[in-house]
Image (cartoon, rainbow, N blue to C red):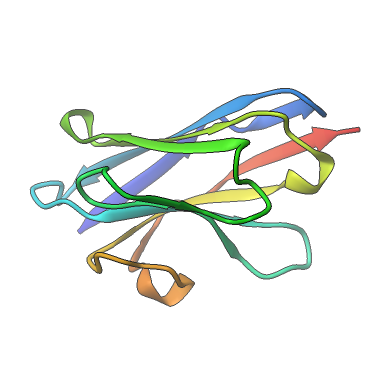
Length: 123
């Protein structure tokens, strides 16, 4: 089993920055494609950014392109989401997830999930 735990969420003013971290433990002997998702109150969970197992390929939602950066350190089993120029509409619970599929673009493609971390952006 693979366990994921997010950290780094909090309250920030619009225009500010946060960096989320996702630490993996357990079955880290293989590499997974990783994704960051978010779920605003009353809305569906959506993919924010994903990164390939080797870290060479990334993809972002249009709403965060140019503001968010996903990265990973496989030696430390950690994935990051650097968020800049945050907006009130970025407010959500952010989840880290892992997939055995090389191009995991949907929620259902991810089999391992962290408990989530709250990000609140005030206007």
